[in-house]
Structures are given as structure tokens and as C-alpha cells.
Length: 188
Image (tube, rainbow, N blue to C red):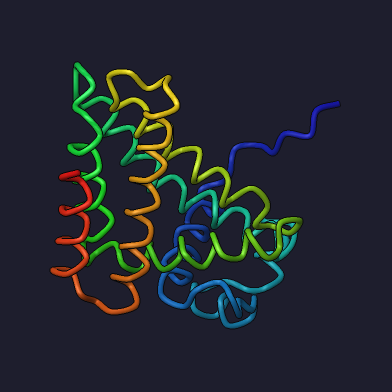
């Protein structure tokens, strides 16, 4: 018999959105159900009932964060009739990634990505890998001849540059310098 979870109730979705907003501000590293529940107007017992466990809640939060990321990917994917080229898409991605209103989401992503590397069997399993695959697929769609080894290397380099600049931006807040570095890299 399949073990698919039924569609979340309105209450479960509401609490997930509140927990997501809380985790964007407070992170996931030291997530404790009692303070989280108090902050979002619930109880640890209700959260455990709805999400099964703390790990289940973390998985739900990671999936919720990917919804925001994947929405950008869908928007960019449908924006162009022809592949616009890697530099165009990379610039749009950087603009989206570097926007001040996305800093909490980007910090959340960094934390989850790092956790997926050090705790690959836990609720973070496959999070890092799936985000790499998502972004590489978008970058691949922007290339006119994506099947070559050279094209694969170029999109991997662009992704590495974007993520490196993002880490630098989050650590220093220096948008001008990191944006200039991205522009310089994309000119080559």
C-alpha cells in the first residue's frame, strides 16, 4: 500500500509558512520545537502531530525553501523563446540572489546546503545535490549547444562563481564588489 501523505490541511500549511518565516530569521542550526511553536502560535505536540518529527518538520521547511528557488527557475525558463545565453541568465540569477529582501532565504540556503554535506543521512539528505542539479539544469537551458563538455564546464564555472560571490556577499554585505566580480567573470 502506498504511503503518500495526504494534502496538507489549511492549518498545516499555515503553520509551515509561519515556521518557514521563523526559520528564515532564526536559522535551522539550533531549531528547538518549543521556542518555534511559541513563536508561531502552536505547540510542540501539534507540530509533531502534523510533521511526524522534528526531522519531518525540517524536511518540510527545506521543501518550502525550494519552492521559492524553483519559482525563480520556472520564471526564467518561460521568459525566453530562444536560449538567451549563459551570461544573460547568470546576470538575472545574480540580481535575484543578491537582492536584499532575499538575504534571509540565501542564508537559509547556505545553512541547509552545508548541513546536507555534513549530515547526508538526516533530513538534509540530497538537499545540496538537488539544488546543484536544479541550477545546472536552468543554466544548461540557457546555452545554445549545452551537450558539449565545454558547455558543461562553463555552466559549472558560472554556478561556482555565483555561489562563491553569494557566500562573499552574505559574509561582507559588499554588493558592489561581488557584482563587479560577477560581471568581470561573465565578460570572459
